[in-house]
Amino acid sequence: MLDIDQIIRSRRKTIALIIQRDGALVIRAPLRTPEKTIRELVEQKKGWITKKQTEMRKNRPATVRQFAEGETFFLMGKSYPLKIVKRQRASLTFEQGTFLLAEKFRSLAREAFTRWYKQTAAILLSARIEILAKKHNLQPAKIRITSARTRWGSCSSTGTISLTWRLVMAPPEIIDYVIVHELAHLKVKNHSKSFWAAVALLLPDYKTHIAWLKKQGHTLDI
Ligand SMILES: [Zn+2]
Image (cartoon, rainbow, N blue to C red; front, top):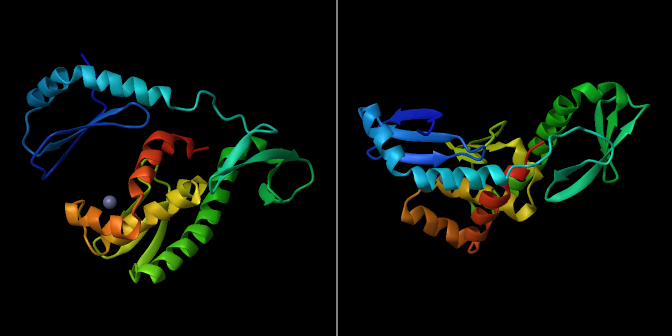
């Protein structure tokens, strides 16, 4: 029998099976659906689930980060090498296309990169939102940078747009798609036909960006 990693119940009408990027199986179900019904559905869809899980797991990076000299890191779709340096006060800097990590911070490299990406995302993504908001005349109430892993962006009912710092690793056109998607939510809250029509109006080739995120999204990580 297949493992169910998480069941999320809410006021929805149908059961949805979601295979996450790490291959985890998450079920979204209505409040009162018995667990037996969910198990039966999972059993019934076993073939599809295992096929999807294999696909997802295959797409994951094969190597774990070592934060070693020469390893590369993404910034706006381009990859830049890491250099370990002896004399540097800051744990991590980015100079002339190279990440410079102070040797004494090597054991804290992941934290240093996360902090650097968060700060950089706050600057670059916010600036891009402002440009696109002005261009399309859709003004968010607030901008927030999150640490979400699988959710690239979201738009609250009060008009706050949240983007994960991981998005700053993506190519510019992908960043623009996620921003435009969230800006369109300022007009249409749900993912109805009229929502996608609004997105298509702002970004006609948005479907290729969705496909890119599906296929390459897992690479936007450290
Ligand atoms: Zn959306």
